[in-house]
Each structure stands twice: as structure tokens, then as C-alpha cells.
Amino acid sequence: MALEDELLRQRHERLAQIRGLGFEPYGHAFPFTHTIPQILADYGQKSAEDLSARVEVRIAGRIQGLRRMGKAGFLHLSQNGEKLQIYVRKDAVSETAYKLYELLDLGDIIGATGYLFRTKTGELSVHVEDLDFLSKIMLALPEKWHGLEDVETRYRQRYLDMIANADVRKVFVTRSRIIKALRHELDTRGFLEVETPMLQSLYGGASARPFMTHHNALDIDLYMRIAPELYLKRLVVGGMERVYEINRNFRNEGISTRHNPEFTMLEFYQAYSDYRGMIALTKDLLQAVAVEATGSSKVTYQGNEIDFGSMRQFSMREAVVEMWPGNDKPTLENVKDPDWLRQHSKQPTPGEALVDLFERHVEHQLIQPTIIFDFPVEISPLSMNKRDEPDFVERFELYAAGMEIANAFTELNDPQEQRRRFEQQLRQKAGGDEEAQLMDEDYIRALCYGMPPAGGEGIGIDRLTMLMTDSKSIREVILFPLLRPEGEIGLVEKLREIEP
Image 1 (tube, rainbow, N blue to C red):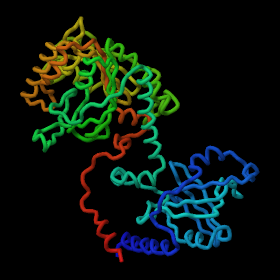
Image 2 (image 1 turned 90 degrees about the vertical axis):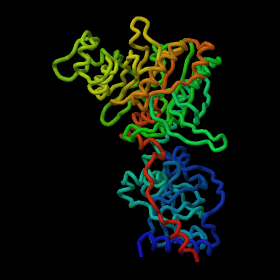
Image 3 (image 1 turned 45 degrees about the vertical axis):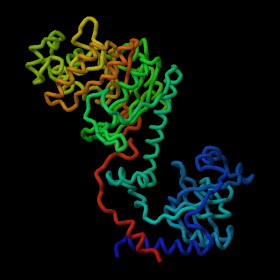
Image 4 (image 1 turned 90 degrees about the horizontal axis):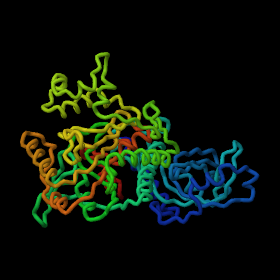
């Protein structure tokens, strides 16, 4: 018999014994007086003498440590990422409660009533006077000293990952703080949070391949959104002058340590601003978020100190000149010369060649937060042209740790020019570019009603969380990342087999 099968049978027998004592192995509500983190915060520094006034507590948690010693024993209960020791002694609890204690397994969820004290070694503990049973574990937890190490199992069974690895919870607590801080900073600046459609008849707002689905009642094909941009700018047309959305986007693209097909972005728009205004806002926003989420504007990522309180700025051309590898560095005149660009890149246009050189030679060097501005028009179909150089647009991207964190630009609000840009995208799609955008006639119509000058920006929440939690892979900061199906588990049938 397999070890898992035998364990299931043993645990099932324990269920019957627990019921025989009068406990429900999958119990009901348990009113508690304190959480474990509250006890540690309020009494963690109290001395044994301070606790002699008898502080009574009623707590609940999962057993993550169990040490039996004759007629007594110590258990560690965990709750909300914190652990507290409890002490059970045979002569201090009822006969029934002690028999329950003898049946407990690592991973069971219990309630304990008693009072606080310090052991001989000085550890804050609960002297138990009564026990309640709340939920039975049927499968074994990972081995204590090595935890849960298999990466795929960790991502697939995130619930087990969080039980076994204490630091995992901290990552997602920080992620929550990042989102809360972003909301707070934008709300205090007069931005309004909204929601826009995830199912769209036309996808747009980014260069990406979409996921398709079908609406049965309307009998139409729809797309999962790749970005909320065009809907948010419709709202700017309608008079919502400062608007944002924390949104889920879906892009049918490759999976890597920095890419997941389903991801979270913050996207916001501010009327009567431009990309320079967005640069200033981004600097203030990310510094404040780092401090609110981590306690400092400086974080450590993969051995590098990243300082969100200090951001460098280069035009894309300046960055290529500044960070070109080797001694044969180009001049600014070189990177403005179409012939020189064609000699160093196989891309069809000078603008695309410049971007190619930037991505190959510069992007990976941008470890400290760096703003790269002034992008070629060919890759920026929704951005406003620079007034003094129409082949470029008023756009910037923020990089840190060698990856893009944010993308922003002065919004294109000329409907005729927007039509021409969409038509250019259609030509690119006809030429084989699967990520080129579609013509959105309703968006053009919205622009015909007049959109005020505006700056807009998208910030990748997942990558920002990677930086602020020192997580090497994007899957570390997504609770349930997309994985291939693992095949038949068979656990349901095993549970059916052990029933009487």
C-alpha cells in the first residue's frame, strides 16, 4: 500500500476517534479573544512577573510544531504568519481534552483556551485549560527542515506553499500593501477608481495577441482585454479628468520569469498633463509606494540595492550612446543617422532599428530605476508626436533591474492622426505582425467629441512586487500562476475508498 494511502486510512481512523470524544472534526465557528499576532505584539515584551496577573486568552491556529513529553507537551500554533507556543498538561485539562491532545497531528487546526505565561526558557506560551477541535488534516505536511521546495508543486498547491514556507505569506502581504499604497497616493491626488470591460468586441490599447472566447447568448466572439487604455480614455473624453483602474489583463504570449499570460496593471490618466507631468508623478508615486510597502525607498533585489528615491533619465538615443558595449561607442549623430542604424540592425525602419539596438544592448544594464524617453513613432500608435521631431513621440518607459516597470506617454487626441496610426497598424498586421492593433471606430468617434490634452501611464504590479520582495520570478508574486494541467490526481477516489 502506498504511503499516502496508508496515511489517509490512519487519519480517517483518527476522525472516528475524535468524533467518539464528542468533537466535530470539521467544526463550527470558534469565537476567539485574541489573534496570535495580537498576543505577540501586546505581550511579547512582557516579563513572567508582568504575566502573573493572569492574562486569559482564547486562540485558534494550525499546529506546526508538536513535542510530547510524558504527561505533557508543547505545540506551536500558527496564524496569519506568526507562531505561538501552547503547553498542555494532563492534570490541567479535562480527561476528554487530554485524549484529544493525544490524537492531534501536525497540521490540525485547533482552538485553545488558557492563560499566558513564560516557560523556564523564557518563551511566551499559553498554559492550556481547554481544547477544541476545528479541522482535521488528511495529508502529510512537507518535512520540517526542508519545507516545500519543488517549484511546480509550490505554484500549483499555493495553499500548501503558504503553510510550509513562512516567507511566502510576506510576499503577498507586501503585494497587498503596494496596491493599497498606489490607491492611496492616487486617491489623495484626486483620481477616481473605475472598472472597464474585460470582455471586448475589439481588443486594443497595447501590442499583444489576445485570448478569444464566445458569448453564447449573443452568439458573438469576444476578446479578453489586453489593456483598459481605450476605455479609460473614453472616460477622459466624458469628463473624468483623473481616472485609474487596477486591472487584470490577458495576453496570449510566452511565459517566462517576467511574463505571465494573466497579469495585473495599474493604468491612470490625467487631463491637461503630458508625459513630462507623468514623469514627475511617477517619481513621487513609486518613492511613496516603496516607503509605504517596505518602510524604505531602497530595496534589495537579487543582490542589488534599488533606490526608488533616485531615478536617472535618458532619451532612448542618449541611452544607446551612453551604454553601448565596448570601446567603439557611437555618437548622438550616429544614432540619428538612418544609414548607421541600418548597418547595425536588420529592422525595416530607422525607428525600429533604434529600438532593437536599445533592447539588445541597453535594457539589461538598467539596474537602477531609469526613465527612457522619446520613442520612435513606429512602435507607439497611441502616443502624441513630438512637436519638433514628428518621427518620435512623447513617451517614456521606466526600467529597473533590467526590466520594464512602467510605460507612459502624452495621449494622442487628434482623431485624424489616430485613424492614420490605426491604418498603419492594420498594414503591419496584414504583413504578418500578429501583435499589431485593430481599427477601433468607436474610439475614433469618441476622440471626435474632443479629448483634452492628457498624460497616461501603466505600471506593472507584478514586476513592481518582484522588485519590492526580491522575487526572481513573476510566478513568485502571483498567487495562482498559469500551469499546464497535471493530469488525474486520483485523491477523490482514494477518499471515497476509505469511507466505511
